[in-house]
Image (cartoon, rainbow, N blue to C red; front, top):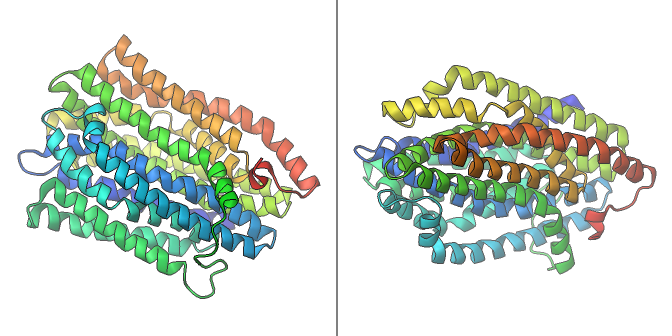
Length: 451
C-alpha cells in the first residue's frame, strides 16, 4: 500500500507544485518590471485570490465527480463511471461560460472592493481582464485532470500541468519584456499556457485503452446533482480560501493606509506565493490518494482503507516537516526572486516565517478534509473546512484591530493549529463508524444515493 500511495501521490504532488508556477512565475517577472515592479506586483496580488476563486469551481466538479467514479470502478460499474465523466464535462462547460460573463461584468467592482488602490488598480485591471477571457481553459484543464488521476493515469495528469507551466515560464519573459506588454503580457502568457494544457487533457481522455474515455453521453440531472453535492466540500474549501485572502488584502490596504497598504499587499503577494508551494503539493498528496480510499471503500475493504488513511497522513506530515525546514533556510532566497526592494524583502521574509509556523498542523487538517470527501463524508469535510475558514477570518479581522495591520499574517498559524485539533478529533470519532457500516454491509453511502 505504501508503494501504491507514493506512486499515485508523487506525480500528483509534483503536478500541483508545477501548477503553482502559473502564478508564482508571473509574479517573479512582474516584480522586476523596471520602475513599477512593486506596484504591479501589488496589483497582481489583488487579482490572485479572484483567480483562485474562479479555479475553485473546477474542484466543485472534478473533486465531486472523481470519488464517485472511483467508487463505481471499485464496484465494477464501468458504464455508470462513463456517464459520470460525460456529465462532469457538461458541468464544466456550463460553469466556464457563466463565470466568464459574470466576472467580466463585475471585474472593476471586485478590484476596488478587494484591496486595489488608485496606484495599483490599472495593473490589476489589465491582468484580470485578459485572464477572465481564458477562464474556460483553466476550468476544463483543472477539472478534467482529476479524472485522469482517478483512472490511475497520474502521469498524464502531471503531463497536463507540466505542459502548461513550462509554456508559461517560456512565454512570460517574451510577452512581458521582449514584447514590452508588462502585466498584460503575463496574463496572455498564462491563458495561452492554460489553453495548451486544456487541449492536452481533452486529448488524453480520448486515448484508446483508457478505462473510462471521454464521451458526450446523455445529460442526467440527477447524476449532476450527486456530483455537485459531493463536490461542495472541496469547492467551499478552496473558494473560501480565496474569499479570506481577499479579506486579508482588503484589511491590509485599509488598516495600513496610503502607501503602507500597498507595501503590505506586495508582501502578501510574496507570502501567498510561498504558501502555495506548501498547500498545493500537499493537496496533490491527498487528491492523488483519494482514488485509492474511494476504490477500497467501494470494494468494502476496511483494512485497505485504514492502511491508506495512515499512509496519507504520514506523507502529509513528512512533506510539511520538510517544507518547514526549507522555510527557515531558504525564505530570503525565495523573496529575492520577486523584488530587489530591501524593505519589502526584509518584511516578506519575516511574514513568511510567521505565516507558515503552523504547517505541521495544516497537514492533519488537509488529510482530514480531503479523506472525508473520499469516504463520502461530505458533512464532516465541509464542517472541518468551515471551522478553519472562520478561525482565519476571525484572526484577520481581530489581530490588526488589537495590534498592527501586519498582525493579520498571524491568522494563518492560529487557524492551522486550532482547526487541525478540531478536525482530528471529529475524523477519529466518525470515520470508524462509517467503515464499520459500509464494510459490514456493502451498500451505497449517502453521497452516492443523493441523500
